[in-house]
Length: 75
Picture 1 (cartoon, one colour):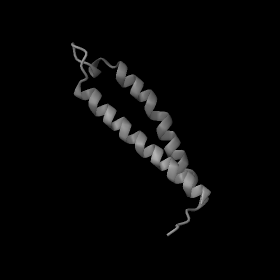
Picture 2: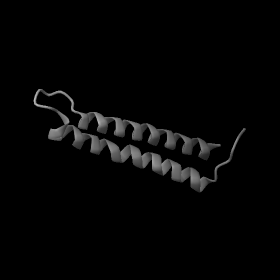
Picture 3: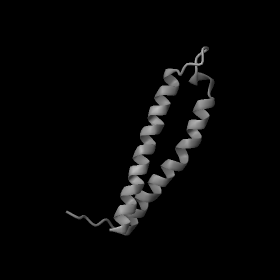
C-alpha cells in the first residue's frame, strides 16, 4: 500500500530530521566536556549515560524522520 504525502509535509519531515542531526552533536560535545560527565576516577557518570542515551535516541529518530521525508518526496 502506497500513501502519498504532500510535498510540503515531506519537506517538513526532512527539515525536522536535518535540524535534529545538526543540533544534537554540539550539545554532545558540551556534555562530554562537562565536569559532571566523569567521576574522580574518570568513569562515566549517570549524567553522561543519560545524556548519551537521550542524544543517540534523538539522532536515530531524526535520521529516520529525514529518511521518511526523502522517501515521501521521491514517491
